[in-house]
Every structure is written in C-alpha cells, then in structure tokens.
Amino acid sequence: MKKWIALLLAAVMALSLAACGGSASSTPAASASSGAGSAAAQAPAQGGDTASLTICGTNGPGDTQSIAHENFAAALNECGDWAAVAMVSSEMGSTDDVLEQAMAGAPVIAATDPARLASYVPEFGILMMPYMFDSYDQLDSLMDTALYKEWVAKLREQGLVLLTNNCITGFRNYVSNKQVLVPADLNGLKIRTMGSAIAVNSVNAMGAIATALNQSEAYNGIETGVVDGGEWQVPTIYSLRMYEVCDHISMTQHFLLTGSIVCGAAWYDSLTEQQQKELSELAVKCYGETKEMVIQAEKDYVQEMVDKYGVTVDEPDKDAFREATAYLYSDDATTGGVDFEALRDELYSQMGIA
View (cartoon, rainbow, N blue to C red):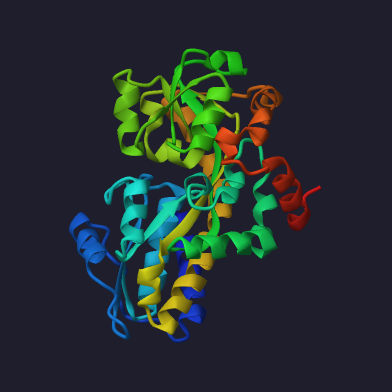
C-alpha cells in the first residue's frame, strides 16, 4: 500500500509541472503539523508573492481523500508561489466550521459534499441522493454537463468557488455490531450520519435513527453507546479505525460520496491570475486521482479488516434499501422543494446515463 501511494504521489507531482508552467521548484513538501496549519489558515494571500493556504479534511491519515489533500498541497508548493499545508483528522474543525472560515475570507480549502452545499444551491444536493449512482465511472462526465456549470455559477453568487467535484471518496455503508441485511435490521439503531437533510432523512427512511454527530466524535460515540454505529465509505471506516469498535460492515452502498472542494470567493479573487489557474487546474488533477485510489483501497482495507481485525462484511439486499428511499426524490423536506425526479432524468440525459 505504501509503495502504491508513493507512486501515486509521484505521478501527481509530475502532472503539477504542466499546470505550474515551469520546472520543479525546490520548495519542500509542506509539514502537516498543527501549528503550521493554523498559521497558514490565518495568513492572507499576498498578491504576487507566496500565497498561504490550508487544505482541510476531517478524515484520518491513510484515507484516500486525506492523501489527495496532501498531494494537492505538495503539487501547489511545486509551483513556487504557494505555502500550502494539508490538515486532516478534523484538526481545523468540522467541515461546517471550515466552510464558514472560507466564506469569511480565510485562506482555506474545505472538503465538503453536495448535501451540505445544497443549503446554498438546492439542486446540487441531488448528487448525494440515495442510489443516485451505481458506479464510480458514471461520474466521469459530471463536470462537463450544463447543469454542473450552472450549479458552479450559483455557488459563486453565494460566495463559494467550487474548484472541483471529482474527489471520489466512495460508496457509503453501515458500520455497527449487528448484521444488517434489510432495512428492518436497522430498526432502533442510532446511526451517526452527516447533519444535512438528505443524509438524516435517508438514514431514517432506511430504518435507523439518524444521529448527526461530528466525525471527530464518532469513535467515542460508538464506544460509549451514544450511537450504535455509523455510515461511511470503506477508506474512512479504515482511517477512523472503526473496526476497533464495530465488527460488522454492511455493504449497502447507499450514497456515492464525492468531496466538493471549495474555497471562499473573496480569497480566491485576491489571488493572482496565475495562482487562480494553478489552484483550479491542480485541484482537478489531484482529486481526479481519487477514483483509482478508492477502488484499490476498498479491496486492500476490507481484506485487512477481515483478516487482521475479524470484521464481518455483509452483503445486504440493496434493492430493499433502494425501495425504502425511493420516495425521498419527491419529498420536499429532503429536496428543498426541487423536483428531483425530473432533475435526475435531465442530469442522466446530460451525463449519458441510460
């Protein structure tokens, strides 16, 4: 795994040279220490000089999104006009905390998701709806669609620059100490999920008691019985060491989670044109590597959790979970009043999904 990650990092660094428009800089890879990250988050961009930036994530070391954050910081630093660091494991606060910092003008990147961004552009939330997608490849054409470009423009009007939405983090599955094969198996279980209406309503529809809890509190929450489990993608289950407090993973694959990589518009506009180009192009390149990372990590991490930690992987009746959540596409409390059924058809058409 370490060799494979090193090769990916080398590939991303090589790609960065073209976006930077020059040769490799001697700038060392940024430290991920807490102090360095805090300083970067507080320092303003400096026009034509070096721009400070903290790339923030809530997942632990070894998570594919965390690796992508580190690759992105390193690739920016290769350009010579950045002082970027990646801070993971919620070191800079929750996703919502970082998003607020970005909108307030801080030099931070927030790795949020479509369900959270639906608070600003309700239509964007459809990307997080249960069983919206069946494979990672289906997302390949997303950012070329007219709908996606329209959503990017609307977010810009709200003060957010969506740099890319190609950060695949994986399909989400249930983690608990109980075999979960059908929705009824979740009855009475308090399941940690994200705080968005889409996530909460979907988990409730699947039979559980949805409980919004910061990711940094989830492990202790399960250990102490505050919640009975949670729902995450495999790389995050592994990086958060959930196998230490849960012995079952049910591969429901109910959400396909993508990381929406955003920054504040005010800070973005303070950058030079060259820095904006580097930031945008390298975000697409670096986070575009996550799909292959996730595919490999799912195989490796699941095997390790089974062999080394005794986790049981259950194959549920996904059609039963799909049927339990189908009504949410016409539920105003979930969609924000948008006709998600019609929007799904239009998006599928633009993406070439039959």
